[in-house]
Image 1 (cartoon, chains in turn brown, purple):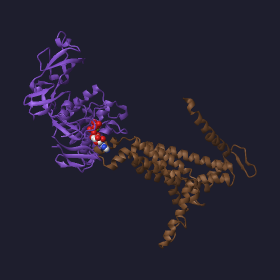
Image 2: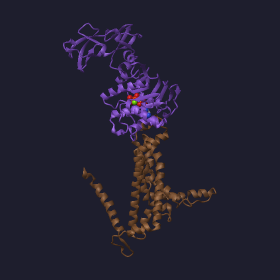
Image 3: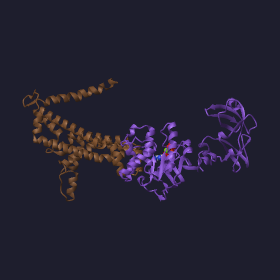
Image 4: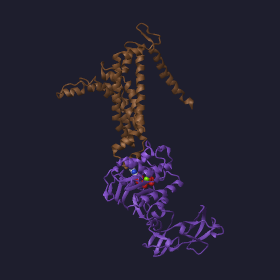
Amino acid sequence: MAALVVPALLLVLLMMVAPMALLFRYSLNIYSATDLMIEAVTLQNYVAAVADPYYREVLATTLRTAFLATVIALAAGFPAAYVLARMQGRWKSILTLITVFPLMVGNVVRAAGWMALLGNTGVVNTALKAVGIGSVQLMYTPGAVVAGIVTVVLPYMILTLAAVIEGIPRNVEEAALNMGAGPLTMFRRVILPLSLPGVIAGSALVFILCMNAYATPVLLGGSRFKMMAPAVYDQFVRTTNWPFGAALAFILLLVTLGLTMAGSALLQRRYAR
Amino acid sequence: MTNLVIDGLRRTYGATVAVDRVDLEVAQGELVALLGPSGCGKTTTLRMVAGFVQPTAGRVLIGGTDVTQAPPYGRDTAMVFQGYALFPHMTVAENVGFGLEMRKIARPERETRITEALRLVRLDGYAERRISQLSGGQQQRVALARALVVNPGVFLLDEPLSNLDARLRAEVRVEIRALQQRLGLTTLFVTHDQEEALTMADRLVVMDRGRVRQIGSPEELYERPADIFVASFLGRCNILSGVLEAPGSFRAGGLLLPSAGERPRGPAALAVRPERIDIRPDGGCLPGRLTMVTYLGGMTEFHLETPAGPVLVTKPTPAQGDPLRALVAGDTVHLDWHNSFGRLLGIEPEGDLP
Ligand SMILES: Nc1ncnc2c1ncn2[C@@H]1O[C@H](COP(=O)(O)OP(=O)(O)OP(=O)(O)O)[C@@H](O)[C@H]1O
Ligand SMILES: [Mg+2]
């Protein structure tokens, strides 16, 4: 039995653990313009990142965007997931296919589509100008980024929630209605608490995806809108400051992990009783 | 006064007619069982009363009020679901108290009534347990308590005992009946177990393919079934087909057999309960050869081949020394029964509904 997990384990060790360990090691080194980096064991990169108001702002932007996108995805995804979970037969397959369809279009392609739609010479603004309203800045706004990210993560949220809602027996809902609960009360007292594992898993998954968003903020947010993942990329590729980039990456990882765990625990305590 | 009136109820699913022209009145405090083979529309009928299924036609009245259009939460019904449908995230007390809470009953009274209801189903001391910590039988009692505690106008049960083992089922059956009578609940009960229906119900409704075949007390239905379907569905019954030549002379397999009841002359069926037939060494109306004798403890079954077709006879197991006790397969005997036990019924072509 244990042998069955060996291939997956090797893959994870090779592709995940090794680069992470290496990256962590780099984050303790000292940047050198000439030698790329100098071997050291110091926290100065972390200290510099936390002390720099620019990166504090980048982290705040990332958190705001991720939080907002997660909440919107949850609110918009729950009703859809409920319908999907309660659907039967052929329509269910069709609806599932429609749900995962956005995943078939890459992030970049989709963002390009948004640019064509929302750009200053895009479809919406051309139409607005034609009716005499004049052009409105839609592209390169935080709103565009949040909207863009939501469309990316929504399928994950819906599918995760639907899997859990499907496991709630229909007659438990009926029992609540039969005992005199209206649809809203039934939802609040029965469906919501019973789908909590889905809410937690879906929100955690989506929040992590949002925190690490790269293509969407770059393409829809423009050069002045900065999130963590693009910032890390900049350090590695543009400035070739690998130690600092690695430190940023680990800050992102720790913040994401910490908030995900804290959020899950909070939700669990709040409702799972 | 809450009685239940079902008036011309009908429900179709596409081309399938699940329930067709069902009329029924359940009096205050009466327990009526819906009985019939799988797929005959029992659950659909019950769910139309609870409001989970919208009728295609017909009306449902509870306590004189037409509730056909009312949502489930707007009807004074409480249902015990097949599989119980308890709230897994709540304790026993929270489950039982849910309906009271929805009815805006203040906490002190709620607690008293929860305690009372749990005592009624003999679960005192289990209030703070989680549902997953209960046995099947205990869960079933919680489901009962949850429904009973609101003192519903109409009490509905959909095969509440089907998940229990035979012994527990017999026990709970008696308990439900006692509670229902003590509280005077107007009750509609779905089952496909005829023993359950016979022992619990004031009246039975036998359904077949969406239609009501016969409504009556257990005795009425067992002793005076209206047709072959009811006769063979309720208990075991020998159905002998033959011809009614004149009033009182029914002939099957070339022999005149004892019969009662009025029917037009022509092809007919004779329904005789297996326990009403006597076995004699000679002199009966119908000779037969034993093909099998099955000992069932208290009862013994005799399977015979006769000129009128196969016949089953059941007798309390004869004592040692009784000549019946010595019978074995291959023996030839004579059968007889009193006129009044031979019930004449019409012959229905297969697949046709009256
Ligand atoms: N939601 C539905 N969609 C389509 N057909 C249905 C639906 N519900 C019930 N039916 C059909 O209606 C008929 C009656 O079903 P119902 O569940 O009332 O039977 P039942 O008497 O309760 O049977 P059982 O003893 O097996 O529970 C069946 O032929 C069934 O296939
Ligand atoms: Mg049923």
